[in-house]
Image (spheres, rainbow, N blue to C red):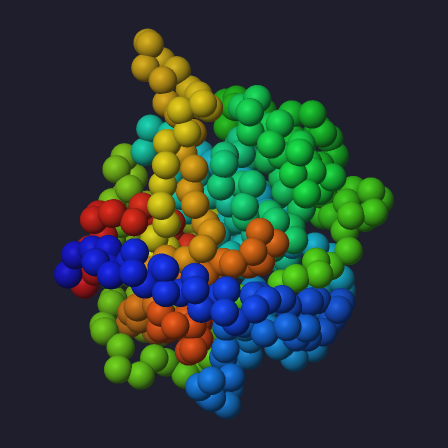
Length: 373
């Protein structure tokens, strides 16, 4: 089964955005250290009662990570900010990446020349190293602010570097090429520029010393339920043809998780050797626009421009969990607000994720390179 964008996307997007405007404040969840409480409402999870085991999208019990819906092993981890890290995925020699299997959320997205890169968000796990770390893109003006995160990246083109410097999270952005040791180190066994790694514990320590490691004021957006979807469509295999790279997710019923393969090879974490897996895989459709004022690379006269991925307003998603798929919508109604997820275009029913980590496969609205079996 080949997945195609929904023909009703534009109409649904408008209706969903109007629902946001009529409902008032969106995604106003505050993190009070170990307790996540509600200070305002989403468009309306109260309109349709949630199942008894649901946590989120705003209200989470003490000690539960709002990014995964799972209890944390170390309560003090919720007393720091999440950490967004830019991780390379090209060339193939950068695989296996270190630490990516321990991220709470991972966004895989296009960069120039149809290559992909990751922005991974860590909060309650602290890998000894993460990388290789590469340069930021326009999407990284959105993800760190959505989750109130620190940001670790190697560098950026001059226009993007300036935008990060002008952003509300500028003091929380630690650029590898200018920050250096002990936050970053280069592995002499790997060729530059793919040999830069970040030490998350050192980033959190520096952020604490800089006075910017307090928990974010706004965090949430995902509702979690252990109950499998009712009336779902089977989805045991997801193949995403990004172009040069072919991603495949295979559902393992024994583990209750999707296992990741890249270009036909098992995708492992270099720190642990374990196969990368996800409780949830989400196809997230968003408008992509080439930003011709920002040249990211040039080779033999051919220029590759930065891509603006518009993670604001709303759009369709396909959620894969428990070997099934469920269609829904994502919404983001404010700059500081995280993404929220809904089963209907009116924002009256939450889309329930499985407790655990989530991989977001970000694709253009007209993307047709998805096959589901």
